[in-house]
Amino acid sequence: MNPQTLLELAPNPAPAGSRIVLNGEGFLPTSTVRVIAPSGTTTVRPVFLDSEGVQITLPAFPGQNAAIVLDNPDGNSSETLAFRIGSPGPSIFSGGVVEDAGFHAAPYPISEGAVVAVFGAFPGLDGQQAPGFPLPTTLEGARVTFNGVPAPLYFVRSDVIDAVAPATLPQPTARVAVTVRGETSAVEPVNTAPTSPGIFMIDSNATAAARHGLRPLDIVTAADPAERGEIIVLYVTGLGTTDPPQFPGWAARDDMLSSTPVTPVVTIGDTVAQVLFSGLTPGSSGLYQINLVVPDSAPSGNVAVTVTTGALTSNPARITVK
Image 1 (cartoon, one colour):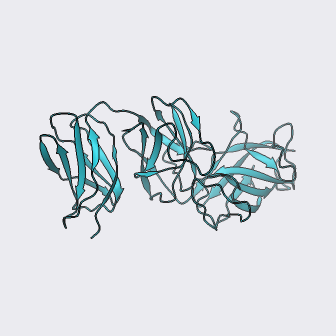
Image 2: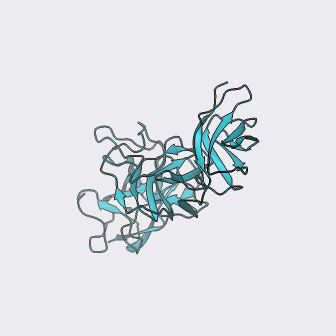
Image 3: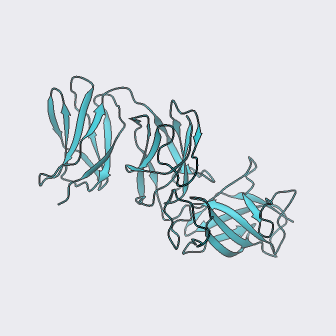
């Protein structure tokens, strides 16, 4: 039997008597937890969440510092992580983990490789953007984890962090935590699924992020609308795995396109559009594009556009058709 891997304690610090989650790998229902304080060691029977997490209630002990370790019934033990009694640090808002295009509220899921927004209170972050690819897993002393696994980061600020969900994203739920300069938030649960389509928008009017296919430098707008029969490129996130696969945080290659194995359904108005390509946008991470033909029967004016994969439908963005 292999020893467990202990990756994270969340929250850390936390007040005595509070509940904390231990994230990692290889956990068993029969695992136990040792809290090692200067005054002695207390063994705790945790609540088993899944193979990547357990929960304990912190026992009372004098002082502020302790060490925490997991034990398997065969005698193998995980590595030891330091813990501190104190006031909580950063926090994630309830329901604050959402896909970063349409910002669908829970219970709408997120998916592996999608761009995700984490909203909360992250004191001390002034705002920093990733310098380039591959995306770092730490920015300005902050990181985001999914069941203890660090995610690539696009941007961090005191109220929001933009990340790319890791390829190891468990299903149907994951536990998200934010660490800022050594202090870790409580975990925030989020639903997960193979896909979670969301359409990027360029303004407060929900205008879809789309370009003219034959004029790729020109954005589709009310002043420069799409025409029936024209090829346009729609930018989304949350379309899941690709072939060939792409490691989250690394820029998608431009010499070998990564396409989605299942073609999404795109509707403009109530009309289904022909999809020519669905996959990752070269030179980006978590950004997908759908090359489609505007239907000849599409209604004119400012109309709704949606993307559907399986049983999930994206936010209704808007696109102008001439």
